Image 1 (cartoon, rainbow, N blue to C red):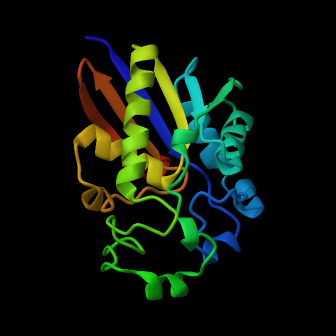
Image 2 (tube, rainbow, N blue to C red; image 1 turned 60 degrees about the vertical axis):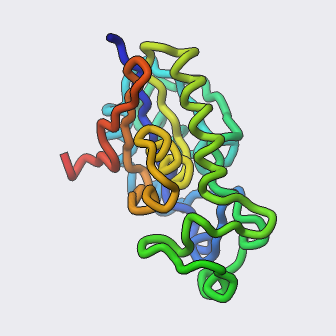
Length: 207
């Protein structure tokens, strides 16, 4: 039975100023210094990602700039399709506040490995379950429309966790245990009606 393979790359690290706040779905830029220093990693991704793949990003500039850097690293440039359902979790009124300010606004205990728990509903924003609810159907749609193809998705930590949760049937709080690294490669496969997780955070120095 043929499989549809998804290669999910989290965008590169963002500017130092953005890392001091909760930026969520804000359209923040990548760190210029990191773009230069991580040239070898972009070359590795360019060689590791399958040729002739369908390329998809979120509408945010940090994912499109990451795709452009992979193309510059040696992958033959491909058309990019932007999908709004791939954006990072929208944190509503929390977007732009500092991590210290967040502590005062939590209504549930923070997750051991994340600033807030999955059940938190930021005023005017989304729960993690909302992200899973939009990413899951998008994956299923692409698996149906591009059956047997390879699909590269450049997205965000939240949307990649949502993809893993959808593939594995995990609860939102459980999937926060996954650390999704910047420029780490996560591979999912749709085989018939079933999903398989082939790798999470694949990197050249861990192979």
